[in-house]
Image 1 (cartoon, rainbow, N blue to C red):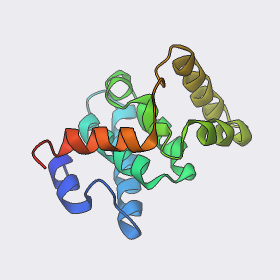
Image 2: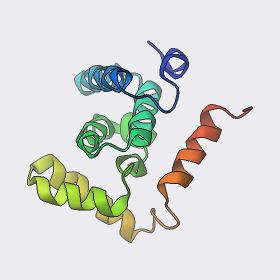
Image 3: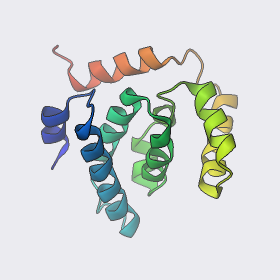
Length: 139
């Protein structure tokens, strides 16, 4: 499946079983990208992250982080803000409570980006609207 097919099939706000399929797709592409940079479709990975961001399920934060940290291309394609579909504060609290090395790495990155003002004027609704415009510019 490519980016266009995923967008057509799931839209930007998948729900229910479609969310599980998006998670499976992201996991598979992340695995490919980790195996060798360029093997995963980073544009499809970004779309999956946007779809999960819109679902705002905290349990997806590490899945998005794994995708973002799969390689250099993925890191630059997937915005750090996409970890924060439940909001920046809730995401930081969630990661703090996990006590896992990858959660600590994600939290450190969030804090660095926040200090660099990458979250200035950030809102979940605003970011969702930004990606709606990106994926459907003529809508």
